[in-house]
Image 1 (cartoon, rainbow, N blue to C red):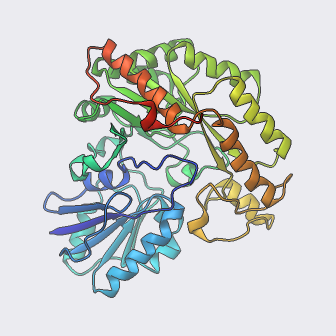
Image 2: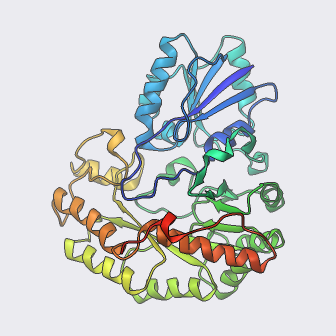
Length: 417
């Protein structure tokens, strides 16, 4: 059976370097397919779709809200051509009713152990309109290694640098952060994969640099310590979301190859200052993730926050505008208060204001977003600061006896001079 699997393109933010990471959703989906399914994968962010290539079924994997309009457009086109279109992924779960109007069938939830029955239904002409497993989570031991063989790895290269491969060690999140959709999608329970299976998958990835995409590694201290101890012998270098801020765990993370972390920065407190410094004390870089436009922020608050980031000499900063994605608690609040401006999903990029702020006008918040990017990167571009992190990891690789296969130059990565 021939399956055409598509990952639709989406609008990139103008302030960010235009590189693409190999997507994790389609590879995880492909890992759960029946063995007799032959996959032809297209990531529309890095290549054109061959619309003429024959297939028995079209599957569309969609992660982002701003990706959904293109997914719906593709689904409509294939269905007009007489193809059966099967859709799934995070954005399909968030926009299920709308997606169902475009697809022949949608899948809600996690796929492990469930696709055999779906494909049997298709082959028997009994495909259901909706397979709903949204809050019925499979045993995490069923999660197999992602099918990275479907990827065209040479397309995920930025200025001579091979991009990181993505992997996940757990699902679900016990935290309940107000902008996040994870409580709706993956539940409030931390669901780790068996560590031996995670290590086996990571050991088999032909890339020394990884991004562990879990919502947070700081959910269970003993699991986190066991994971880091198990990863250390692999000598991989990896990025993640927050690591637990204790001396033992930070030491183990550094020994396991922690390269840098994405750390939410929400104020100018000594707590944040000290936490960033503790990462650095262990040789771990920090990319701050900063949401602008929360109800407690004024324009002056945002200016002070940017000054603070420069003061602590943060390695990288990624600024986003607070965005009320469906099924997040902030969306429920803003909708109830009549503050959501529209549901034009392609504009829900986290780079455009789509709600009425509490202490600013819409235009002021949009200005502040650009101000934050321009001010933080006034002396060196994001590309140049990224290059510094890559140089750091190359030094670590050489110390481990590894031979980095890339060269970084100032002219290739850019500097504001």
